[in-house]
Length: 375
Image (cartoon, rainbow, N blue to C red; front, side, top):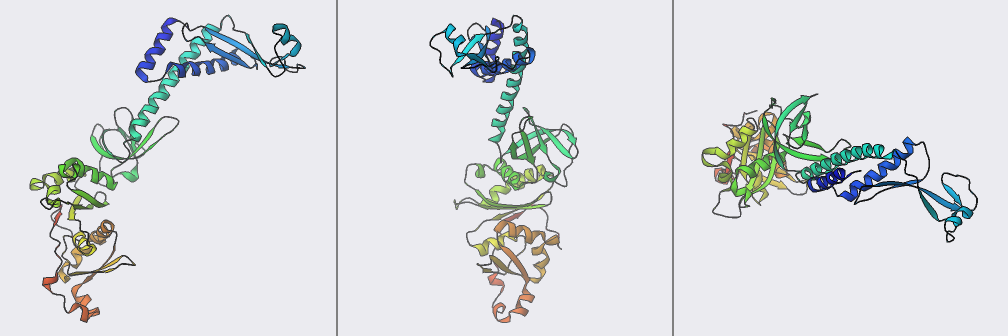
């Protein structure tokens, strides 16, 4: 092993962050296997590389015993004491057995080990880089589609967008830039495997953080997100600063901020509603754009019984129950919606007092579409 090779190891240490000691130890371990393979021996050997000169020496290790049964592994006490009278049974003697033509084998083995170690180090560096970005948004370029999996180039590595994490209205074209959400980074024998998603609620939350400075600096807080990817989402926002309208901040001037997110999600409709610590008000807001007359809570069952005007019933429920379903996900309450006339029929005494003045104000919301399609 010459000076050029030692210089190369020093460069690898500097550029790749792999210490020379780790490389030397790996090469020594590989040379032990190479020696046994090439010289058909089962002897217990040790390989040492001089860290300064690169010289390689092979030593056979023999254990001192009373009676030799395995000549390749053992040496008699009598013979050992001829070398050094201080040897005792159980000691290990090393003898140099470096073959004359071992340099060529060593060079080839060392090259293979170094290449392998570089690959492993690069994979580990990629893993460490992306494992810290789990639950974060990332932009990549669509490379190809393999068995419905979309392979996305992230620069230093590739990520997999499985069919289950693709939005139904997405069409992927080679070379297209897309934003995705990193759900998991796995270690594998072939390097890190990065799984990404376009349907995860976290993607929507991170898009708002990117588009709305007030969310990024903490003035506005996203309390919860409910999403049916590709169709409709609801986002509950709150601000402790009374001078800041959290819904207006998310909508942006002329709806510019939310529309940028809608565009990134290929037209997914987004409702932004105001979070409230009062569950009644929050449930009413979550059912926006429908107006709510009253909300009665059954705390133990975590059930909200909601009464809406007759003409708002379809709007409150939404197409195929979507609005009510998203509101339930957003608030964490089961929601049972009843029309005003049905509520009056079932409980005339309770509903007689319900009037227009008691309609819960849920106007602090933004509907990211022209209107919910009625069921």
